[in-house]
Length: 234
Ligand SMILES: [Zn+2]
Image (tube, rainbow, N blue to C red; front, side, top):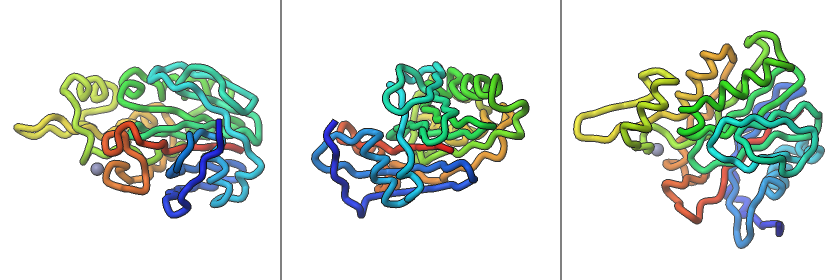
């Protein structure tokens, strides 16, 4: 994959440092080249020098619930939650409206792709259960970060979609008003589900990507949308 160049003006960033864990969300504007996780990580190094010692591992995301583990950087397979226990390998997720969720638990980190399908079918539960098998014994030792995603202001969905996410997350994730389609709060759904799984604390980047030009949104940008990245490593 050819290295992309970036407009440095258009780097959006949210970073959380919990030594030895780093969690970062990055929105990058690719110009004239395909932007992949390795390109995006190079942009992150400009902002977070500690990322220079890190290489990304990522999945071919499917909007499903499969959880994979890896110890090596690079493409890892098909799935929507990636667990890494190797220091220096960043679990990576990329999105453009969906919710990127990063989790640190014991000696492991995980990156989860959580769109409405994943939130309706339990991708966060799958990831936390897999982490709990090896990396932590109770929920109090896991921490999570919810990255920027499309907000309830902009995420109009069909009743069928709203009901599927609502049934797993709680009624307050959907706003219904007469004469309008339901509006769904994906970030709140992720927060509710993580809380229900015993993960705490959970931090949220409260930013609607469709309202914020620094971040990519598929609903706003369509096929020209780049990707927002989530990286977590230790
Ligand atoms: Zn919005």
